[in-house]
Length: 404
Ligand code: ATP
Ligand code: MG
Image (cartoon, rainbow, N blue to C red):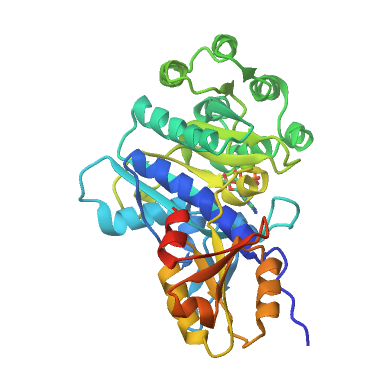
């Protein structure tokens, strides 16, 4: 019986993994350069962790199950709630602010399509302990610098959920959340079935407000009672730091825990699944039995980024050490010596020299080092450059020097 991988999951071959590792390396390097340190939480958590804020309806979207003792568990659909649980369990006493980053797989029971999987990876940060505009500026800048370093074509959009929440303040929390989710999905038809009159008009104009900072002036006219200071300070700082962004007052974010500045990045070349980053400031800790600490963070959609990212990563030099019969172990010793400078493979199938050379070509190696009786006696090796097909006799030391 041939067994396929589960729906919505993927296998990754070495070329994919090498590219993904390179992207991951760059993300880590930049996050670490801002003082973020990595944390890792369990792959599964108590289901409550994810339903406490978002309600039971989220169960439809997550892998929830009972273990053999009847505990309600879930595979993590995201990492902000787990990281805040970790904060409450382990780190409430440590000096603030706390800077954590994570890179891990997440699971969502969604309809699979291009850029949308049931197992996918997120790289993200959480900056815990500050409600200052400077915290928002830092995480937005960091997300921007990472995507910029990866040479992605993207647009960063910055908004404030407080605005939409302010407009919806007279509705019940349930109803307001429902409407926020419809705005997040840009389901304007459904939205119109929930809203009418003044409320409907205000929401529509906010959702359309995307542009430069003049958008804020328009918004002030529509929602005069809202305090725009925080958002304006964030925008001014981003301008000064030359972070390119648009103000977008229609960003609602699907997850209910956001309280202030929110941001999303959209990339070209991904079709409908073009959101590659989502983040904002939120409060979660108090829901998990901790203090009511402010936090700000983002999550990058690693798989979507890997799909559009075009890195020219340096491939290591590859050498195949080819041995004549009887000299296999001598060849292994030479291979060991070359490994400090290159990737080296040796024959493990006891094949002929001709077949070993042909395999070296098959795997696109750069050099074949041929270990033969005559050369070995003189302390030499034969090196064939597989690109130019030139072969020469040289010493191991000299060959190692040419590898740099
Ligand atoms: P979307 O709007 O595309 O459904 P989201 O708003 O639910 O995504 P977040 O919870 O903000 O996503 O997660 C952060 C990032 O993780 C997203 O911007 C996206 O790039 C990525 N992501 C979310 N769900 C998936 C998925 N099922 N497959 C691949 N990437 C995903
Ligand atoms: Mg979204």
